[in-house]
Image (cartoon, rainbow, N blue to C red; front, top):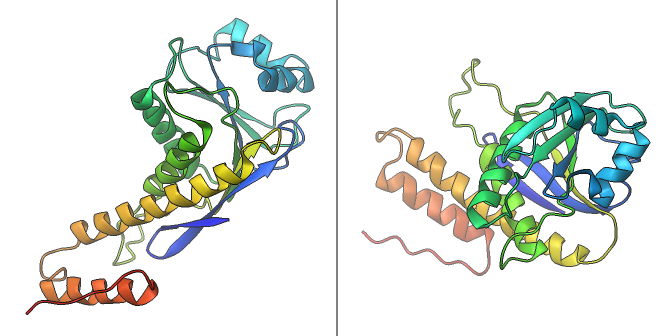
Length: 232
């Protein structure tokens, strides 16, 4: 399990799980609608479990095969999830850029929902010259970035995300450990980015050289692989 830092010190837990999509109990289940459409084994099983709901929505045009398009279904019949979020990859094969845009969009959608936990499937997705663990790493990073909120003075009009736990759900144990490690790396990168963003957002009268030196010493004190020397 990895933790991504967000919302002024609060954390979001990210982990990997094996299980059936239709049987997964969660506040929100996010699944991709890719080039295969409902011919994808995972989506086909969800369609069957929901009594053909997805087929009807595709026929009506509610589920669109356009990149970065999202459809939220509340209380989907036959599924254990409270919400089903369909995210579309588009009609063209994914490359690095389009996948990163997709993960950013998905992360933004999830962090805006009034939920505490979510499960995400990347099953069936392929990115040119990249493996599944790379995709897991980018997901972890984008979730961390999407949860960032600069609110050091606790302004009441800025509401942090309520999302605290995200599971990467896959049908088998194949690649499970590699994906778990990739999530940890992505989380670490996201934490670093959020730290840098927070420092950059602080006003100049607070983020002084002395403040940065203190911050650097604090980071070095947390990790045995880091050292800090302040030049005066």
